[in-house]
Amino acid sequence: MKKLTLFAVVFAASVLFNACSGGKKKAEDKKQVTIAMVNWIECIANTNLAKAVLEEKGYDVKLINADVAPVFAAVAKGNADLFMEVWEPITHKPYIEKFGDQVEHIGTIYTEGLLGLVVPSYVTVNSIDELNSVKDKFQGKIIGINPGAGIMNITKDVIKDYDLDLELVASSEAGMLASLKKAYDKQEWVVVTGWKPHTMFARYDLKILEDPKKTMGKAETISTIATKGWAEKNPELASFFKNFKMTDDLLGSLMLAVEGNPGKESEAAKQWYHEHKELVDGWFE
Image (cartoon, rainbow, N blue to C red; front, side, top):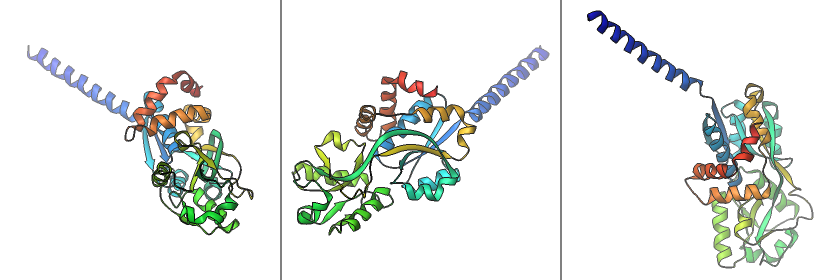
């Protein structure tokens, strides 16, 4: 009886040890991915979609939120694996020149990215070179986003090239959108730093001012970068991010879903994923 009891205790301890060891090993074996992001709606949408998909595939996904410069530095140093919001060839050129030898391009998400100065369609000017003549209607201001954003530096070049007598006011994307909505609701004049893709064009009747001097450039691509050498070590994930492609319709619906659920972006992205599961799962092939 004592031998049987002793056997039972040893057996139970063995089972418990193996279960704990197996659980620990399973947790350690779970692949981790860290994705850096900035507070731009298309970046928030795409990044949360990637998070939702990868978590369902068994990955442990961590998101890091910061301004553009720290994000590039984090990926370059390996503190973050990926960044899904690289605008080229103009917007993020300074960061690519600085960190290019420490990162690698994984894939292009979107090919029709466009920067510009944006106004409501009821504003009667159509070109940047007309702004000085109506500067008082804009209260002498161009409403911008966070200071480190590439579009802010480009807008400074626009002010110089066109000799504009308007002040570029730094804010955030949320602040810029709040100013746009406030003015739009009152049918007041406002000019903001904007870009496509963005949900503002789905919510309001807007136009991008013509840029005769092409200071803001032509259409740009939005791409994903990773820490140099990351793709070789993570071939399955590299395939996913290489094939991660968005059209205006797809990205527009994703952005609206995410923007319409503040604080629940991941859940909204997960729902969108299940509605487009066949397409998205194909990105792993």
